[in-house]
Image (cartoon, rainbow, N blue to C red):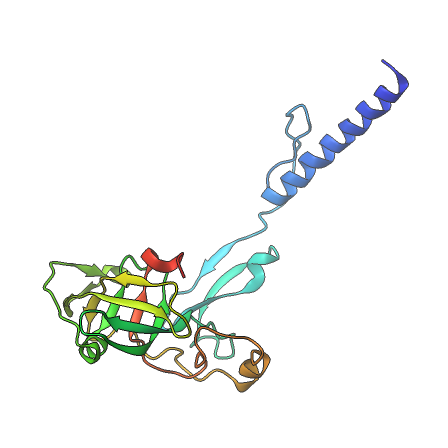
Amino acid sequence: MKPDAQVCQKSLSSFDDLFYAVLAAADNLPSTDKSGNIAETSSPPLVRSEVSCSSGPPSVSAGALTGANVTAHSRAAVPDCDMVLLGTCQVRAFNTAAGTQCTVRALVDSGAQDCFITTACAKTLGLKLRRCNLTLAGLGQNIVTDVKGVTDCAIRPVHGDAPHFNVKPVVLDNITALIPSVKVPSVVRERCNHLVLADRDYDVPAKIDLLIGAELFHGI
């Protein structure tokens, strides 16, 4: 073998050892060398999950990103924890048959299998309801019993005609409580004043008229 080839082979060997060591550290696995031999290690796990269940929406500490312990706390247990804002937007909802429209506030939820609209919003638009045999299960498999039916409407952005979606939302008396649950500190709005936001009133607790589910999530 030529001298240059020997140097190259030695460098590759060192690189392989380093590569496997980095992978082992990242995955919390025993170190292995390039031949597949397992080296002894006594390193403890980097992450341990601890979940405490109590009332209020959960908030997960940022320690998960640094290899520290991960603990889920309720807002009641940690009153000064960071606020988490859910995705909301303002859109125009249409009754294409009657030609009526109104601006509504929507919650964007990629975990919902259907779209939903409140009874009040459907009434404002003059939408016709159809009966449906639909069973809805919420958190903890709790059954939603106030399904009023299903209807048809269209939604578009407030400042434009595209994208345009025809949806068949399920009609409920209420979709959620006020979102956000409390007013967002004014410093947040001050920092976002230069942005064009989908919901210009994102920081003020208000009702949700429409829920946009996974069917349309990637289209918006």
